[in-house]
Length: 396
Image (cartoon, rainbow, N blue to C red; front, side):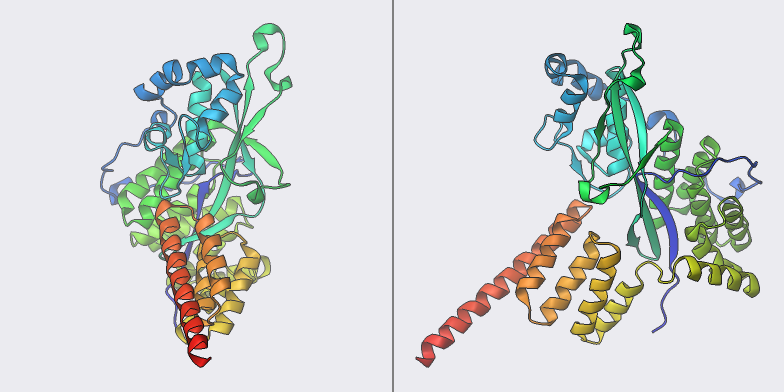
């Protein structure tokens, strides 16, 4: 079976900080190829507080912040069941005001919201990249590598003769501990986090077919923080989707000049080089990529989908289980493993993996879909048990 080309993009539910950037970027932009954006792109708006946010701090949790430490008061407000009751939802990346209004957001949105409130409260804010293997997700022909950031808050005690870096920090993280247990962190700046937000918006626009908007988000991100190299990869894909293969290659080769072991840019430059007839260069990058990444993302998952189409449910379950070994909590892998168990007439294991898929879903829509599947399987299982019981009664 011939598969459509899959392209890779770095999407920051958190972060992917780059090495120190010392070279000047070449002329990467072609503004005249794209229509003006139909949505505002403003770096200042990312962390800006809305009037309801100001009101919330002055009246909503003012007493709580007065009676408790500011960090603790803010944490309690943000937690499920708190006054804000913020929910995790990775449908798209929101700025601070949007996340506050919706009461939901992905990790980056919720970090931005927390930072905005904390800064207004007078707390010292430090963004932290959580290092480790990125979690994968996919949307159509785009595979996303999802990084992660959290936030450390301290009281500003410098006026009392104490350095703020010497005071105890409170770390707020919006992912379960299993995703970051034992992983080191490193600090990133607010300008880098703003560039991450813009790169997310560029990637999301690209995935939804809004290529012109995607270009302006990526362009602004690079202008704001050229050291955040993930956006070069996004820009290269934007040019490719827009039909400018030469410029896409130029941008992706720049990304690889900065980070020669960047497997995401590597995977994307190979097909554009081949499209230009530069097969020997594409082959060299393909060999290098195989050395660094013997099995690409979703390799076993796609093979499992093929096995499902052939109704080979046993092989499909084995392949989905292999993919889960590489990404233990990716919801779609568990959903398809559950479907394989449905095909194998193993309702108990099917329900278990529907449950895991539901519990690890990153959007409300996916969680509802997995719950529906689990409920349907439970009804089928209950109906089968009733039928078996009736058959036993008749045989007596």
